[in-house]
Image (tube, rainbow, N blue to C red):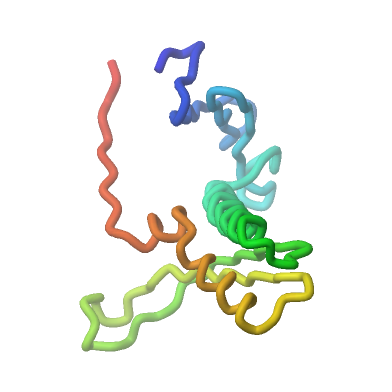
Length: 149
């Protein structure tokens, strides 16, 4: 990956120096902005980091549901996914977490519109659990960090 050409499957994020937090997000064919809201010192010129994460999960969920519905000729008219994030207290000494530690919780609300019967609806909700981004977020993730000179 060079500074001018982003390879397929790669993402380059670099600061713009416009404001305190604004970042360019570059892929092979897209240019986006990441930022923080004004109340946190940003310019609110793009999605925040967690919003990008949720957008990936929501988009993947919606796409896999649509793919399954279309390939099985289900009467799904529309699908939408609303996501939110908060921290919850883990207060159980039986867990592997330190006492009174916090756990990230993502709430995903899926709305399915169409003349779906109960079995079709149940199956689409099962398919949502197989979303690759969902599965990645629930797996043990290893992130390798390297410095480029």
